[in-house]
Image (cartoon, rainbow, N blue to C red; front, side, top):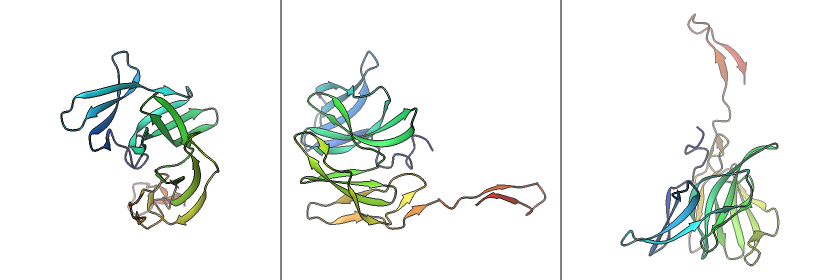
Length: 193
């Protein structure tokens, strides 16, 4: 379902940034998108950061989590003449700049100078330039068969000691069929397999 868990599996409305800070994506009084940094202990507002989108084709679809010391990871969708895609973007907590990091991807984690991300049921890794804040290559798959529902991307986590955590199973729900039931019991006619 659009906007639901299976399309944006890591989507959150509020994320922990560090022990003292929560980040919320919201709209300000002028209905402009912004990030609000909250004191995690008191709930007091620390800072408002207006979001600056790099393209009018981008639609914000929710926070995922902390990316690095200055950025949060977000889902963004692109609707344009080329079609629709779900992408990962980073938002600067200093400037508010929202920048697509990985196209057609569903979850990501920065480990050193590498970004691990999922595309469908595969885990990929790409080199990352922290100064330019961009990927240095398109990435390559390092593992396949992670659990993924329909067209959504798989979820994973890498612990501080390097342990990869994921659900196995590959793409689920891809073998769907459309049937017509004529109303005469089990006389359904298969249209698509």
